[in-house]
Amino acid sequence: MGPFSIDMYLPGFPDIARSLHTSPENVALSLSSFFIGISAGQLLYGPLLDKYGRKPPLYAGLALYIVASVGCYLSTSIEMLIAMRFIQAVGSCAAGVASIAMVRDIFPVKDNAKVFALLILVLGASPMIAPTVGGYVTTAFGWQLIFLILAVIAVLITLAVFFFLPESYKADPSYSLKPKPIINGFLGVIKTPQFYTYALSGGIAFSGLFAYISSSPLVFMEVFKVTSKTYGWIFALLSVGFIGASQVNSLLIKKYKSQQIVNVALIAMVVISAAFVVGSMQNVLGLVGTIVMIFLVLCCVGIISPNTSALALAPFEKNAGTASSLLGAFQMCIGSVVSVGVSLFKSQSSVPMSVIMLAASSIALLVLIAGRKNIKGSVAAKDSAFAAH
Image 1 (cartoon, rainbow, N blue to C red):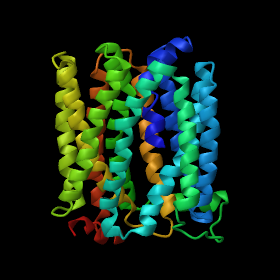
Image 2: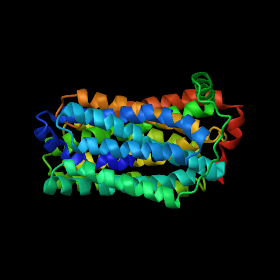
Image 3: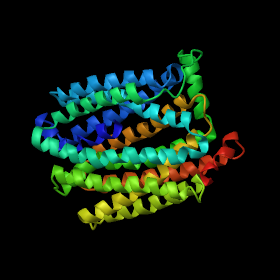
């Protein structure tokens, strides 16, 4: 739901701008509002998932998503679209938080990195399909139909959840939804060194993906003048890097620890992003060169993400819902800030995208180096070597 909601309408940015009498930069704010909605919603669903089990909150989120998708379809102004996208995001993130919590419910810690890599394979298929389909739908029927299709997809997912998805966590009546216990639960997770180190470093590195998503319609369709259909195919091609790298990671963790893999991948991301910045500023990359640089950066993100996610959640079992919601909130909050930042740049080039990717990878590496000093000696540290098995 998340990737389709983000990616499917990207080829329609120019058409949305013309239809709602605004600029593509303002349309990009509807993407930013979606990221902000996911950030807020992540924190909402974590406690609900731990108290009521995984499925009831999931039904509530799906229902909200369907209503908001219809609202997007009916939008007659950019302000209405931005507001509906926020509500749509709050509904959609129920699925993201629930799926991450279920991984921790069902699988042993030593298998989490492998399972997250498989999740990325499923999630990564969406960006390969969604923009391409969105490009054709926009061209043939207009951008509004995209949101009607998203509503239908959510209805089908709801039916699949009802008939085929088993409950992985029993409701816990003792779990309090009063503000103080919820806040204490979040603080307990945040204060765990292994969690905040890998959640922050992984989330910051992951924001490189958000920089790409937010900038790509402008860079490819406005700067390089490709059609919406061509943009969809480029987006699909670049998704192969993200997906392929996550599957290569499944092979790497058989020989190396997740910590080692994250180190190398982050350093590689810094170097590649720096080369991207230089090439963009010198205006020597062109369309093909830009695609290659983005492809390599996304490969790094695809390797970093499953490892940092698994390492961040390793210390938690009973409150996995709360931990997974915080993990997602970190990623989406950082991503929303990045997407808003991208929309503020008026540069008609790939420079803003490349600069944000370099900043994200550099800061993530610094956070990792600083945070690891506090992990040593913690109870969670003994579990963090699971990826070697």
